[in-house]
Image: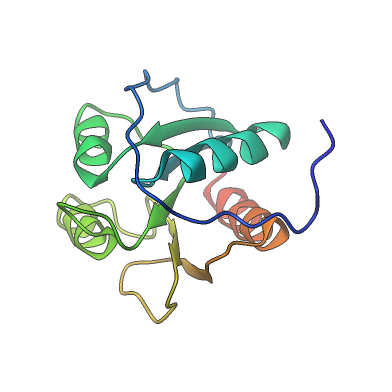
Length: 144
């Protein structure tokens, strides 16, 4: 699959059906949490093309439910602005559960990037593929 090097990923807001969490393959499983179906699909396509296993969640509640059932991906790509529970609130919940940046590093994506407590990396929207891939490569190599 030929992927353009500078494709942007942006947000809108649709839901996807739940998917089973694959067994964690040490450093190759990424959880994508975004309320925008188009973003989840674009990120999944990109990451799978680069050899990652991908699990998508339509919101923070779905991500928490999977994590509470024992799923532990190598890293998370997390939208900051979501309905019901924001990405910032999810990061606080993860810290409370003992899943802070050392155990589950999160790459936060936001239209207005700023320092986000609990995030391993913050990227501005629209996301540049190379920035996302570089961030995840660094985080997953550290987790391996």
